[in-house]
Length: 301
Image (cartoon, rainbow, N blue to C red; front, side, top):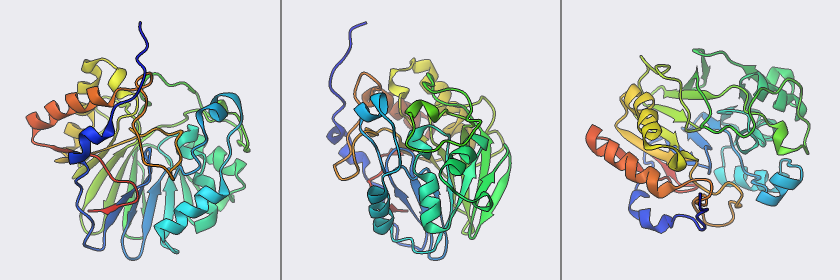
């Protein structure tokens, strides 16, 4: 198979960067990869919070660790104060969980996830009373928000499969951050608004049956190089399963590029965002769903 060089031109999809700015007290801010902050005037919850973003050579050949300066700059920009109640990892690969214990330590939030995520927290010196291990189907309440965790699967192929059985103390090899438990996370707010965070393009058939969400934050990293039948099944078992009318694409950006530079798509050798958007646009048109791209740091409704 011939390797395709380059990457999709994200400027082709500028028209999809059209999420309206939040005007009420509730807003959602995109942090890159699968990172999101759901916040109102009093409380906030976060998924992943991956701000360090080490380079590809470091990930492949060296060891990775949270970058205090990058984490601090991101939290300062978010200006959450003491509102952050929980940081939930969608699974335990480094590009989702690496910074989560540090974010929890700095903000007073609780780290939430499976036992693998808990072991990353323990390796990051997070006290046990600031770690919450959840089970599939469990709903936890954090101020004005609820988070329901439903067991899911990682997008194939999972390059670091398995579970984390002992604390991971950084700096560590990227391979130490095994996937662990993957989650579909349903976020509810006291206003009645609901969202599904599908942080990776994997799914468990039927797992989301009976759940509902207004918006799906749909992870699409790696989706564009999978068979079209898989993409259509993914849509059916996530977006269609929860009856969403709006989809916001996440995990499409180059995770090795710092947040100090404009976001760009993952390269063709690992993904093809053009294919993903083409197929999802067809499905969305069929089902009466709108598809959007989020803007980094922008608080949207």
